[in-house]
Image (cartoon, rainbow, N blue to C red; front, side, top):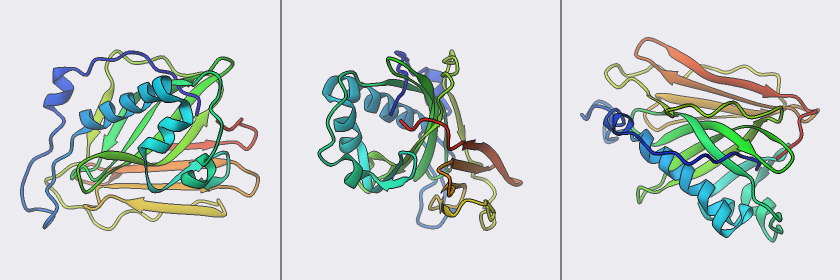
Length: 226
């Protein structure tokens, strides 16, 4: 997984806007998002790759049933088992994070860099029962160069004041298309792989009026897998 790590300091501003309003709106689910914690998890993940090895980091931070796209969809535990570490681990950092209102799921997007290539990635994070964050899906999005790192990592939380309707039905021509939704229904995503090996990810965030598409990208089959 070829990513680019730039040392980043989480700002007090980001931490201040990280929490969504509390209340019983979603039943037993407490609607409290914490995107700064997701960013911290992504940065820790990237640092672990440098300290302990690239694939060791992926194994240590993967949720049960996590998937990777290499370029086809594979179970991370199976693909990573016994895999030799590269001589030099890739580096990466998050550029943006989108979180459900309840913080049960979040999506990060960022840039990666290896010794001979660079690009972007997306990772879907799941909050565990003990509060830890682990990734459940990881996909390389581009290999044509990483976008410049922002001065501040962008963070958005789904609207909590108005309960969303059923998530949108995502229609994609991929033959292997799978979708997921946060526990409170405010974050929705889909991942797919075409018969030719192309990869697609779509992410929608509830803004109080409608589901807004915040990420919609297709990687052609010719794109080199990470």
